[in-house]
Length: 127
Image (cartoon, rainbow, N blue to C red; front, top):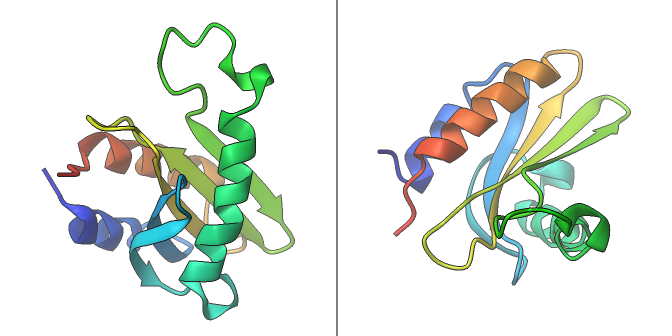
């Protein structure tokens, strides 16, 4: 089972990925990062994506009938020329972590990236 660095390294192999990070959305801190961040700043991107993550997780719209599990699995934002993917992780602790990918739309495939991101999240081991 891979740790953070191995997981992010595998994420960077997904076609079109410009950068990947693991973010704690309760604090907005980057737990690990590889590649480029939007505006070359993983920390700023983490803080900004944290706001999106919090809005989704704390929304009553997305929490109905979740069976006690994290209400949101993925967030996908499309922007001119880029995709932003966030995959929430189920962890043994408070589950306030997500994997974040930043993709070039011309080079990447959103469906492939989402499928591979899900697989990475499922095998990531956080201790």
